[in-house]
Length: 295
Length: 295
Image: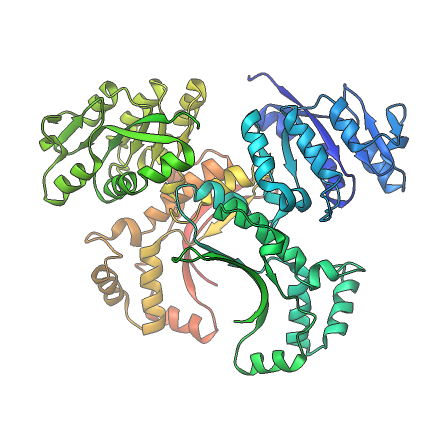
């Protein structure tokens, strides 16, 4: 038998992503031991209420239950610390791996960006589901990780269920990828499908998407194309391997699409999708855009 | 600048796969240095004529040219050794990585199987495109590799262009995969499509596949379903994680499919595919089959 390897984890963010991760920790514990000889220990977790930290491990199930009953992790007795910041937790928790699942903030990437920097500086590996820090500081974060000899895993930030980043970086490691193109946003795709198939105008299709739980109350990040643009910036840097910023992306959302345009496309046997596309042309010109296209 | 890392390679087999690999070595040399600080050196190559071996490296371009002019690698002066076996080359070449691209032999897996065993015993990593050794000895080879702390990469043996094995083993590493199902053989798919769309009987469709270069002169491995069965055995072991042998697989090829069956399927808006399927059911019963199915 191989020796069981304890891995000390610290989790920032206990929203939807964070809690699903905690459920996996509970459900997969035995399988991870049996299959990989791994024993992950949750040594800290932070949310907006503060943090909870315990060197011998917190109970992930108790964190899930606290959050389910509307309480913050600071109320995890006796290890909760009201008002302790995520960054302070990363500094103190002495973990091996940071799991960063705080909300995407495109202004300054916080609190995720500082937490990731701090973790890398300490020599921790980082797994992040948060686009903000990568969109704002991909080259710097990767350089820091390389310096410290640690890994940053972020395939979950783009097309979570499809390993897009992993395919591009690992499976095609020896290839030069010149172009990538795809539908990178679920909400707009749902809305366009509703408009196309049900003949609904934009506002009704948006309301249906909100009712189905596919669109946020404030849908602007999705419908104006910025969510797809964020993902495109991450893919351009990681898969195409060139510097890219949000400001470089030509972005046009779907709010201006009129039912007539969809009708016309349909009559021609075509459909309209919000396509994200990044390309390095033979003449060296690079382009990045998120635009509705008839296919 | 990172130091350039020399990797000493030995290649067994200089047929289609082996030569394409050598072309990549030539064309990607600069990119591998720039991107990964890697400098692969071909220290040995073997084919049916014998071997060539040089500690300072052979010229991959010269090997390609020799083979292109119908000569064996033993004629590579002054490093060629007529009659030197592949196994002897692996023993002597002092390489870091074995690339195994000899023809698939399902009787005893040779010469690939002995070469892979020898390489693993010496602590070399192995990259193989050869199904035979894996179909015959997957568990033993993986155990040996784990003991020696080296890797066996074999994603190219199944659906080469799609990273099926890598997706199952790496990207879904935390998941329990219960079933896998797919079209795993190009030749039979081509023949069935010809029969379906052009209304050709089996023998004509096979002749078309042979003319198009999709089928071998002796097509039995493909059309009787054994090629797909081999791939299924490799996927069952590596992705589903259970022991499987060719003898466990229920195999029915496409030679018995009559045009009427295809016509009937077509009339129902269905199509017939040679489906490979491995499944672990809730009651613990495992099944593996390669059979034509109407979809």
